[in-house]
Structures are given as C-alpha cells and as structure tokens.
Image: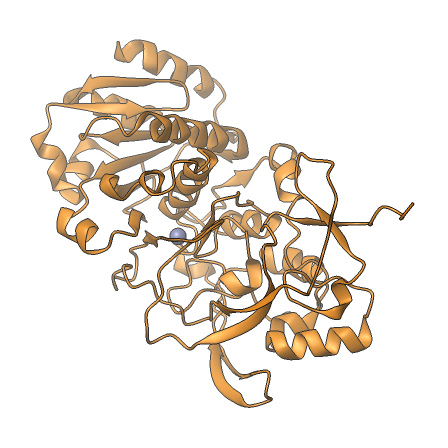
Length: 415
Ligand SMILES: [Zn+2]
C-alpha cells in the first residue's frame, strides 16, 4: 500500500532543482481525529501543497532523528499517515521511505491529559524540531465543537494552517546569520481620560518583505516594524492585525493568510537560501480580502485607540474606522462575504471591550520559548485565547454585534 502513496508523492519529484509544490505528511501513532477535524487537516495540507513551493531539503530527516527527538514514536508498530491526497496506516519501518519523499513531516505527539484537563481551552500546539520536521499535539477532549456545535469546520482548517505554519518555523528564524533584529520600543498608551501608562511594543525580527506590505496596507510609511504579540515574537499582534491567520486569536468566522504573513514565511529560512516560496496566484484571492485596519494610518499603529479615534474624527471625518466606535461610521454600511445584503453601521450600540496588548501571554501557553499553544475562550462569534490576569487592562470602544468579517460598502441611496 505504501507504494501507492509514494507513487503519488513521487510524481511531483520529476523535476530537480526547481521549487515544487510542498508535500507535507502528518504522521500519528494515535489514530484519526474526529472525522471533520481529520478532513480539515487534509484540506489544510492541500492548501499548503497549492500555496507553498519548496526545493528538496538539503538536510533530510531520518527515522533515527525521529526516534531521538520524538522518543514516543519508538513504541508504535504502525502509524497513520495523512497527506493532501491520502490517509492510510503504514508500518513504522516504512516511515523512512516517507521521510525521504515528503518535503516536511509533522508528527502528532501525545498531549499531557492533565494539562488538557487543567486548561479546557487548550486546543493545539505545534513546534519545529529540526526542519523539515515538526511536532503537533492536540487536546481532543477540548474540541470547541463540543461547546459550540454550530462551529463551522472552516475553523479547523484555519487551526491546522495556523499550527503547521508554526511547525514550518513562522516567527522563528532558523538561519541566525540573516536575522534582522528589531529592538522593542517603549510608548505611552493613553486612556479615554487622557491618563497614560507606559507599554512595550515588540516587533517580529525578519520583516524585510512583510514591512513593505504592512506599510502599504495601513497607509503608514513610518511604520517601524511588524507588531508581535510579545517577547516570543511568533505571532502577529492581535490588536493591530485583527482577523489575520497568524494573530494570537482565531476567529470562528474565518482568518486570512495575508501578504504580511507571506512576507514573514518567505523570510523564514531553512539553511542559507530562502526555502519557502509562495504561489502568489493561488493565495491572492484570500490575501487581497484582508481589510482589517486598511488605511488606518500611523495614528492607529502608534497611539492608543482613544487617540486614534479622536485624531481621525478631526482629520479624516469621512473614513470609517470600524470596528471602533466613532461618529465617522455614521452613514456607513457593511456587508458580509458571499451575501449581497447591506446593513447600516451604527455607533449607538457601543461597548468598552478589552483589547489585547503587546504583552499578552496565554495562561495555558507554557513558557518554553519555542512552544506555541492556542487556548480558547468562546464568545458569541469569536474564539479567544485566554489571557492572564497580570495583563494590562486596555479597553477600546467597539461596535457591538459587528461581525468580524464585515466589509465596508457604500450605503444604498434612500428611496
Ligand atoms: Zn499560534
């Protein structure tokens, strides 16, 4: 059976030296996931296969490397392999062949059941070992579907894309010689009453592609760096980047792999050369949809939401700054993707909502530098990472009941 699987793999290796669609194999000694999760895992691998081009790795992994870095795999006699095409059980001794033909291999490892029980919001973690090898663990009992049966399967698609991107090294540069370190900076966050308190802003370290895209997205030529979620620098900052796929929160209604993430993953090296090349034609329809914060300008990036709202109302009274409440949003309308219905935007229903600062630390994230975790707290439409109590309480006026995937449009003329 393995030869059928390998045959399909091998078809793609006829051309040497030019980047080819990336084949990822996910290997598990723990059987299949819930059926829709497993299907979305496969869909995410199809997505990687279409979106990513790579050369054959110059440092292939061997089964010995696997046994050394993931010792629990010594105990299995057979494992389940998921590729973008197939799902099948193979004998452990056949894994070596698979490692030779796959461009990247992710091993599902056991999640500590006590840790999953202690943190009911912990769902998945992924980390690179030595590329092209990564591990991923999943708390099956914490499946958010159990609490929200109507949760769209698309959520799991985004979850696996997010996790596998971490596995590929997103946010962690591998070749230190090309590291472009961005120092953090202090700034003052002013509350609505004008009282300020000092905060730190952290930036991702390898932004030479992404920063150009971000400057043009936000309309701020002075943008200093790509805001990160904190010292770990492996996520985009939630407050700045909203529904981007690689922020610390996943939205239940969909998350976008933007040109900014394209820039970051293309600067994530495996060896001396750029390893990941993104198929721009394939990702463009999704990346072009990313509209959170578009043209909000430098005041959004560098000041508090309260200052941003005040300044924008004064200088650009016609610009909608949803999801922030503002008189600027009067006479503005929005629609949802895939629907022609147009809704009026209102700032009458407004709430002070806690937003996520730069220092946000997930309470279930662990402290190991390389580890990554997703922790979820469910609200009506959004799934959040949990925050620690230590976090600065920052609040911003946000329009109530505005779905996260809104798109600002012209209001139809009355009459
Ligand atoms: Zn993450």
